[in-house]
Image 1 (cartoon, rainbow, N blue to C red):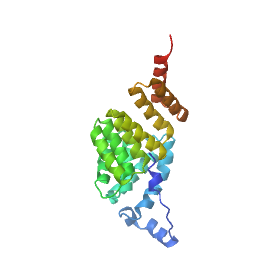
Image 2: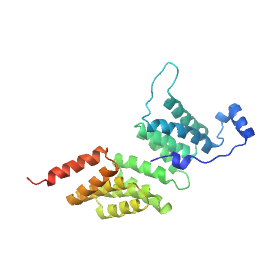
Image 3: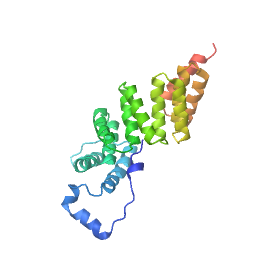
Image 4: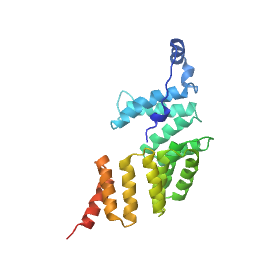
Amino acid sequence: MSASRRLCVAAVWSVTSLACATTSPLSRQLCYNPDVQLANVLRPLEDLRAKGCEIEKSTDGPATCDRLQQELQRLMVVCPTNAPILLANAVVAYDERNPIQAQQFLDQVLGQPGRYPDAAVLRARIAIEEGNVPFARRLLEQQIRLVPDHAGLHETLGAALYLDGRLPDAVSELTTARALGAPSWRVAYHLGLVDEAAGRFEDASRHYGEALQGNPSWPQAQSRFNALRARTAKP
C-alpha cells in the first residue's frame, strides 16, 4: 500500500511565509502545516525505500533513510493525533518487521472519529497474521460500511473470509475488489487460493498463472502453480 498517494497535498506558500517557516526554530517544535511537512519527508523516503533502502552506518552520521525515518518520528511527536503521520509511521514500522509498534500507531488512528480505510487494511492484515481473523473481519466490515468503494477493504476482507472457510463470500468480495481497482494479479492469486480450497484445481492453476503474468517474480504464486501442475500432471 503507497501512503504518499493519500498524504501528499499541494501547497502554495508565499516567499515570506516560507522564509519564516525555515528560519524560525519553533517550526520544528510545533505542528505547523503537517501535511506539507509529511509530504516533504515521504517523497524522498519512499524513493529511497523503493530502491531498497537499507540503513548503513557511517562515520559522517546516520544514513539518509535513517535520518528521514527519524524526521517522520519527530513529526509524530509534534503532531501526536495527526492520522496521516501516524499511518505513515505505522507503514514504516510494519515494513521494518515491527508489527507491534505498527499496531499501536494504527490503533491511535482508528480510535479517532472518521473514516480510515488504509489504516484498517493494514491493521486487519496484522490481525490476520496474528491469527485473529474475527477481529480483522469485524474491522473491515465496519470500514466498508463507511467507505464502500475502497478496493483494499474488500480485497482484505476476501482474504479473511477465505481463511474463515467462507469461500463463496470470499469470491464475492474479491470480485468486488477487482471491479473497484485492486491489482488483478493479486486478486487472481487470492481467487486461486479459494479455488484450491474448493478442489477446483484447474481454475486454481489458471488463476495462479494470471497472478504470475502480472507479477512474474512472486514466489508464493510460482510455488503453488508448480505444485498444482505436478499434482495434475498425467503419469
